[in-house]
Length: 355
Figure 1 (cartoon, rainbow, N blue to C red):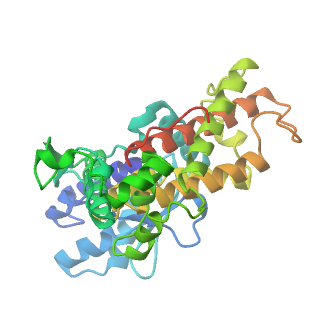
Figure 2: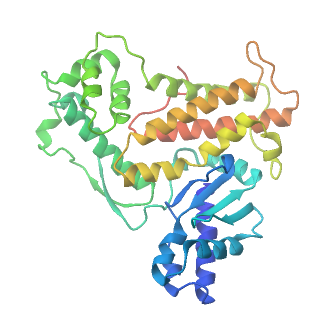
Figure 3: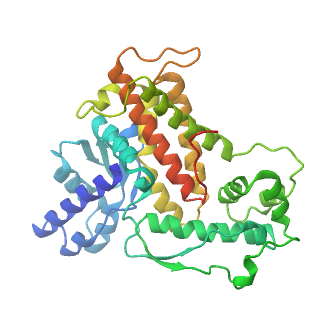
């Protein structure tokens, strides 16, 4: 959500500077969407964009000079803490802690739509039905069909114009039936369809050796889906337990950042802010495996946050004495719940509130 705010603020600056003749008129047509990267040394609230390089190609001015003008135009926006050009020409922006915290609250409120953005607006994609994995003739086919279906949904979430394909199967409608000779069928029967689907979703392209390992259903392997489902259920349970204690998330307008100031909380807030960019990048690069790996980073950050700054009293831990702090930490739990549920939905898996 914060990257969408940055897009809007920078787009307004481009339009204003172009109208004033500081930038070429065509600069107003540039969109910074999708150009954001974590700022080097910028901490959890630092964002860098390469948009000045694109504009520099139009008029021969140096990217560093253009980045300096853009930075100057952004200073004074209340939720932007700093805006600085780099020597190379990148524009680096640091947002206020409150903006970062508010972004998480908005993600929690958005629920399953928290992945949505307009980063890929103007592009086209096809949304296919989720494949019946037991109908695949090979592991490679199962991987390809899962990747195709997932990439279309990632693009749709990122604002692409989509065509709905009711019959994604290239081999025709009859190929939807389960195949007794499918090498995937035994794995689905043994591990469950969600577990197999997630393993396919997180497998990088061209990694045939990893796909073959899925066929070895008699070999004990860690289930990469379980920690994600467990973290989602844990966040959902934290919210339920909070409600049982009469503590609800929210109600901290203007001071949420003051209540979520620990290093673990700041790290988690920063990671959550990249959700929409990571979704769009995975679609643009045709690398749907990037999303599950991002979700696993969120899981690790949530567990670290839960350990260092628990929202409620847990076994062996003392929760915060201040109910306002507990309520703020529930906002963070709610954001984690929303991000993990939305991310799993884009892999074709429903998140569970209880395991």
